[in-house]
Image 1 (cartoon, rainbow, N blue to C red):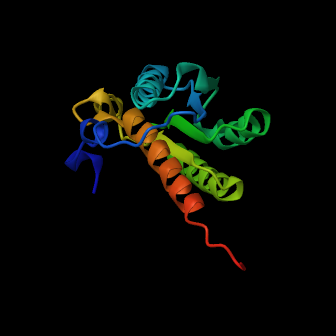
Image 2 (image 1 turned 45 degrees about the vertical axis):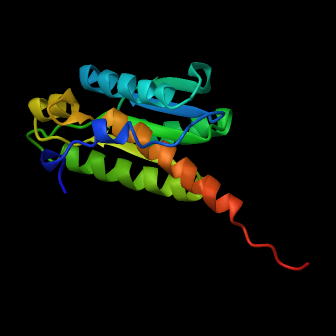
Amino acid sequence: MSSADQSLSHALQTELPSGKDKTFAIIVAEWNHDITSSLAQACKQTLMDNDVAENDIDVFWIPGAFELPSAAKLINTKHDPDALICIGCVITGETKHDEYISSAVASGIMSLSIGLNKPVIFGLLTPRDNQQAIDRAGGKHGNKGVEAAATALKMLNLQASLDGNKKKIGF
């Protein structure tokens, strides 16, 4: 279902697991700064609203969306957070540039998440125009930064529940 049909930002805030004692890296593309800064702020606030200490959240600003996967890998190597949240905004233009960037970022983030065996969250907006971006960065469709934080918290909760259910072999 498209985000035009729903806004999970408000509903998700009441159902989230605690992020207490977990660490997070929020990696934010500077390109489309007015949009990405709103997403990053909402993401960070949502984490703090769900028991994450502010000093357990590091925010890293990088040049653009294309750099999100490589920056996430580098930050993971140096800081080893429990979850990485990648935030950016690629607005459709006159060329296919947005398609190439969005596809590369999605593929890179997915590969990184599987390879690291930890949540690496895809918080990349891919709107057709600036108004659609505004609508998803605190406008009529909520704030997708909230949803990125919610996804990280839920994936960490899933990981913890699976770790607690490991079957032992032997006696």
